[in-house]
Each structure stands twice: as structure tokens, then as C-alpha cells.
Length: 73
Picture 1 (tube, rainbow, N blue to C red):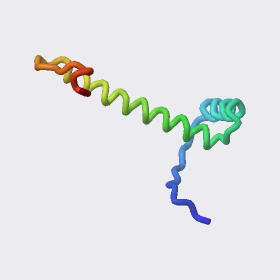
Picture 2 (cartoon, rainbow, N blue to C red):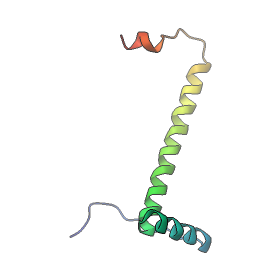
Picture 3 (cartoon, rainbow, N blue to C red):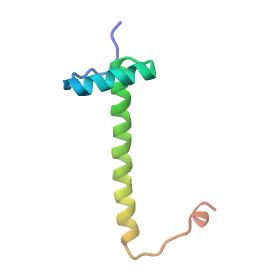
Picture 4 (tube, rainbow, N blue to C red):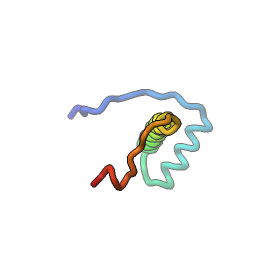
């Protein structure tokens, strides 16, 4: 049965592959599953960095602010 997931092909050097194999043994996951987990974590990290930059930019502006507890009343 075909899957609805997209497939990608990644070429890695021997050191990276051995690291993925070690993690796969520790996590009881396939090498591909470990690779996918690490990619998802990295994407989440990149998203956090993006929103952190936006927040820092907004905080650097001189403007009226509303306290957190007041915003949710």
C-alpha cells in the first residue's frame, strides 16, 4: 500500500552514519527513524530561533506594553 508521506534521499559520510546507527540502537529505532527525529528536532529549533529573533526585535522597540496578566483578563 503506498504511503502519503514524502520520501527523501540523504547521503551522509561514514562518521554520521555510525552516529545514527549508535543512536538507533539506544533508541530502539531504525536509522531512518532516528534521522527523521533529528530533522524534526532541528526544524523545531530553527522555528524557535526565528520567533526569538522576532520577539527580540519587538522588545527593542520603544512602545507601550501590556502586562501578560492584563492581556488575558
